[in-house]
Image (cartoon, rainbow, N blue to C red):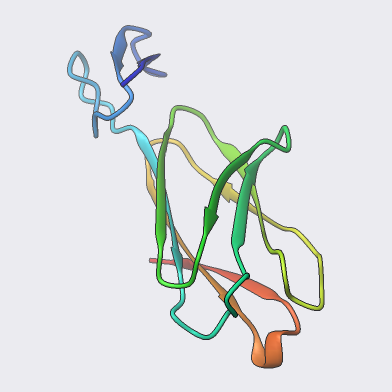
Length: 116
């Protein structure tokens, strides 16, 4: 557990909280879900931040969740698809952002879609 500053009131709160205990501002949350479709034994979905730091390496069917306190860009790719293209997604603070990550037909590339 770490302390972060609320973007509304500036007071410190736990990074695991869903909202600020002082002013009630909801904290941003980002959830990545990976599809259960076949990805191969060595395949991993790789989620990194704007600085290139790898935040998670997920197999098919796994999830990753992180809290954010400001709008944040994430990059998603699969290490074994034919295309090494990184998909940029933007997650917004004060919102629960959900994304589904999956391999497209025949392993040609990775697709990232926002879930409502």
